[in-house]
Image 1 (cartoon, rainbow, N blue to C red):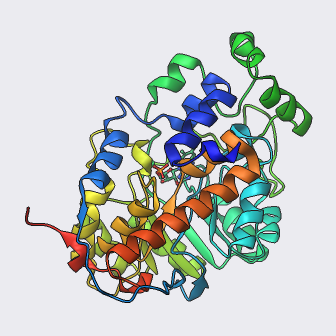
Image 2 (cartoon, rainbow, N blue to C red):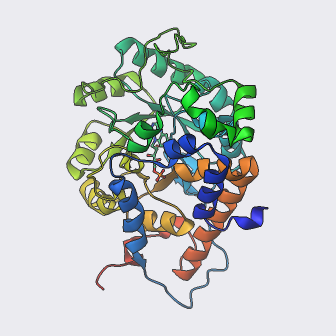
Length: 381
Ligand SMILES: Cc1cc2nc3c(=O)[nH]c(=O)nc-3n(C[C@H](O)[C@H](O)[C@H](O)COP(=O)(O)O)c2cc1C
């Protein structure tokens, strides 16, 4: 069975078969015409790497240090809301694998399990991703809960001042919090495994934030978070307030402008997270990888940079690292793997990515991920 998965695209196809159509679309889709999403992948594909010969690359080191922690691999799992909706038990599976592989899992504000339970299962290998804006009280509660639960890294996602329309979700009538209505019955009838497991586990909800539609109150006791709510008033003043509230590592996610990257450095954040949200926000955005080198130039050679958007292979991870990232995150591929083959699929994907990464390093004459650098890019063709 596992033999059928040789690439992220194989996992994607497997997930499409096993997930209800509207659920797959909510995962796979992006903003508007989905041009930014496609461009993310195309721009990465267009990067060419310089092979080298006669270097002893018998031993290749894949572990690295990022934000004062040692990780076994130079990549981790990007924050994704409502993972259990895409595949039942996804939060648990992602947390377990982050512990087993010593890799970071970014836990979304919109996670479908409590932020406390996820970091516990991940054995501390978890970063908390904050959506701020609905109310100061909710933001403060989330930050305090993250601190008390032992999170050492807080990621402020700053590229959702408003939620971009996703045409596939609109056409399918997909909404969060999720409700099963008559419209979905035919779609779901064709995917009994997903439906059964989802019903057995209870329909996933964004449990860390109360939602007015569901009437649910978070365990933090503050209700009222709406996914569509305006976060438009979140500005640089808020970032400096957050900086004084949070004593551990602070990261800003969704940076696509060299000017913003420099401003974030000046605001005292510990790392900048270059990302266009996997093309799920500004459809007119360039491919995220196209901005990475420029942002690296703007912040200087030593400043910590995280990268995501469009990475679909170990080769893609290498390309992001040589373009200036210190650490790489992937989003959709992990949920494709779970959708296609559950926790086995997840483990298989991780082995595949690590193996691809290691093979490309050998071809570049590189035996340590920390030595991947700009000279390995072929730029003047
Ligand atoms: C289903 C889904 C849910 C997401 N939810 C969040 C979220 O709650 N917070 C956030 O900062 N980013 C969220 N993202 C964006 C990811 O963190 C990441 O930027 C993006 O998926 C990277 O692109 P990739 O999927 O091409 O790897 C989400 C992405 C997906 C696909």
